[in-house]
Length: 142
Image 1 (cartoon, one colour):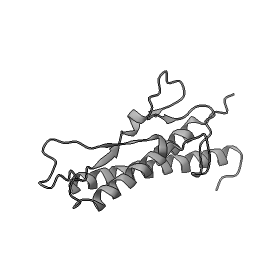
Image 2 (cartoon, rainbow, N blue to C red; image 1 turned 60 degrees about the vertical axis):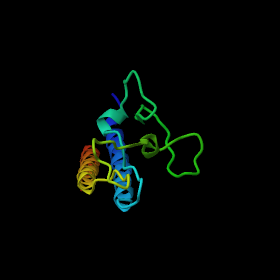
Image 3 (cartoon, rainbow, N blue to C red; image 1 turned 45 degrees about the vertical axis):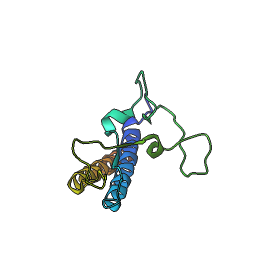
Protein backbone atom coordinates (compact mmCIF):
# COMPACT_ATOMS: atom_id res chain seq x y z
CA UNK A 1 0.00 0.00 0.00
CA UNK A 2 1.32 3.42 -0.93
CA UNK A 3 1.08 6.39 1.43
CA UNK A 4 2.16 8.80 -1.31
CA UNK A 5 -0.42 11.50 -2.03
CA UNK A 6 1.22 13.00 -5.10
CA UNK A 7 -2.01 14.72 -6.13
CA UNK A 8 -1.87 16.85 -2.99
CA UNK A 9 1.74 17.83 -3.65
CA UNK A 10 0.92 18.70 -7.24
CA UNK A 11 -2.12 20.77 -6.25
CA UNK A 12 -0.07 22.61 -3.61
CA UNK A 13 2.63 23.35 -6.18
CA UNK A 14 0.04 24.59 -8.69
CA UNK A 15 -1.47 26.91 -6.08
CA UNK A 16 1.99 28.30 -5.23
CA UNK A 17 2.78 28.76 -8.92
CA UNK A 18 -0.50 30.57 -9.54
CA UNK A 19 0.13 32.83 -6.54
CA UNK A 20 3.59 33.72 -7.82
CA UNK A 21 2.22 34.39 -11.30
CA UNK A 22 -0.59 36.59 -9.96
CA UNK A 23 1.96 38.60 -7.98
CA UNK A 24 4.03 39.22 -11.10
CA UNK A 25 0.92 40.23 -13.06
CA UNK A 26 0.10 42.70 -10.28
CA UNK A 27 3.61 44.18 -10.45
CA UNK A 28 3.41 44.42 -14.24
CA UNK A 29 0.07 46.25 -14.15
CA UNK A 30 1.29 48.58 -11.39
CA UNK A 31 4.28 49.52 -13.55
CA UNK A 32 2.37 49.82 -16.84
CA UNK A 33 3.37 53.49 -17.17
CA UNK A 34 6.92 53.20 -15.83
CA UNK A 35 9.42 54.09 -18.57
CA UNK A 36 11.73 51.19 -19.43
CA UNK A 37 9.87 48.62 -17.28
CA UNK A 38 10.01 45.09 -18.69
CA UNK A 39 7.00 42.85 -18.02
CA UNK A 40 7.81 39.58 -16.23
CA UNK A 41 6.16 36.17 -15.84
CA UNK A 42 7.00 32.63 -14.72
CA UNK A 43 7.26 29.59 -16.93
CA UNK A 44 3.99 27.67 -17.42
CA UNK A 45 3.30 25.16 -14.65
CA UNK A 46 3.50 22.19 -17.03
CA UNK A 47 7.10 23.15 -17.84
CA UNK A 48 8.11 24.08 -14.30
CA UNK A 49 6.64 21.10 -12.43
CA UNK A 50 8.72 17.97 -12.12
CA UNK A 51 6.91 15.30 -10.18
CA UNK A 52 8.22 12.09 -8.67
CA UNK A 53 10.07 9.95 -11.17
CA UNK A 54 11.26 12.80 -13.38
CA UNK A 55 14.79 12.06 -14.56
CA UNK A 56 15.87 15.65 -14.87
CA UNK A 57 14.72 18.61 -12.85
CA UNK A 58 15.88 21.95 -14.14
CA UNK A 59 17.02 24.76 -11.86
CA UNK A 60 13.48 26.23 -11.85
CA UNK A 61 11.62 22.96 -11.31
CA UNK A 62 9.06 22.85 -8.55
CA UNK A 63 10.02 20.05 -6.21
CA UNK A 64 7.64 17.15 -5.61
CA UNK A 65 9.55 14.18 -4.26
CA UNK A 66 8.30 11.61 -1.77
CA UNK A 67 9.64 13.89 0.96
CA UNK A 68 10.75 17.38 0.23
CA UNK A 69 11.00 19.76 3.18
CA UNK A 70 10.01 23.31 2.32
CA UNK A 71 10.31 26.67 3.98
CA UNK A 72 7.02 27.87 5.38
CA UNK A 73 8.50 31.28 6.15
CA UNK A 74 11.62 33.20 5.09
CA UNK A 75 13.54 32.44 8.32
CA UNK A 76 13.92 28.74 7.49
CA UNK A 77 17.43 28.00 6.30
CA UNK A 78 18.45 25.45 3.71
CA UNK A 79 15.12 25.00 1.94
CA UNK A 80 13.21 27.01 -0.60
CA UNK A 81 9.49 27.27 -1.02
CA UNK A 82 7.72 26.08 -4.18
CA UNK A 83 6.91 29.69 -5.01
CA UNK A 84 10.56 30.68 -4.73
CA UNK A 85 11.54 27.84 -7.06
CA UNK A 86 9.59 29.49 -9.88
CA UNK A 87 11.87 32.25 -11.12
CA UNK A 88 10.59 35.13 -13.19
CA UNK A 89 11.67 35.94 -16.72
CA UNK A 90 11.03 38.94 -18.93
CA UNK A 91 8.15 38.71 -21.35
CA UNK A 92 9.37 39.51 -24.84
CA UNK A 93 7.00 40.03 -27.73
CA UNK A 94 7.59 41.44 -31.18
CA UNK A 95 6.82 45.18 -31.19
CA UNK A 96 5.55 45.01 -27.61
CA UNK A 97 7.61 47.93 -26.33
CA UNK A 98 5.98 51.34 -26.18
CA UNK A 99 7.93 54.47 -27.20
CA UNK A 100 9.13 54.88 -23.59
CA UNK A 101 10.54 51.32 -23.57
CA UNK A 102 7.79 49.77 -21.41
CA UNK A 103 6.80 46.24 -22.49
CA UNK A 104 3.61 45.86 -20.42
CA UNK A 105 0.47 45.11 -22.42
CA UNK A 106 -2.56 45.50 -20.14
CA UNK A 107 -4.66 43.17 -22.30
CA UNK A 108 -1.98 40.47 -22.10
CA UNK A 109 -1.69 40.94 -18.33
CA UNK A 110 -5.45 40.59 -17.84
CA UNK A 111 -5.37 37.27 -19.73
CA UNK A 112 -2.40 36.07 -17.67
CA UNK A 113 -4.13 37.15 -14.45
CA UNK A 114 -7.33 35.31 -15.39
CA UNK A 115 -5.33 32.17 -16.17
CA UNK A 116 -3.52 32.40 -12.81
CA UNK A 117 -6.87 32.72 -11.02
CA UNK A 118 -8.28 29.72 -12.90
CA UNK A 119 -5.19 27.65 -12.03
CA UNK A 120 -5.44 28.65 -8.37
CA UNK A 121 -9.16 27.81 -8.26
CA UNK A 122 -8.47 24.43 -9.86
CA UNK A 123 -5.73 23.65 -7.32
CA UNK A 124 -8.00 24.56 -4.42
CA UNK A 125 -10.80 22.43 -5.91
CA UNK A 126 -8.48 19.43 -6.20
CA UNK A 127 -7.29 19.91 -2.61
CA UNK A 128 -10.86 20.28 -1.35
CA UNK A 129 -12.12 17.16 -3.15
CA UNK A 130 -9.07 15.13 -2.13
CA UNK A 131 -9.65 16.04 1.50
CA UNK A 132 -13.34 15.08 1.13
CA UNK A 133 -12.27 11.66 -0.20
CA UNK A 134 -9.83 11.17 2.67
CA UNK A 135 -12.51 12.13 5.20
CA UNK A 136 -14.98 9.76 3.58
CA UNK A 137 -12.41 6.94 3.64
CA UNK A 138 -11.89 7.31 7.39
CA UNK A 139 -15.61 7.72 8.06
CA UNK A 140 -15.74 11.43 8.78
CA UNK A 141 -17.57 12.83 5.78
CA UNK A 142 -18.73 16.41 6.10
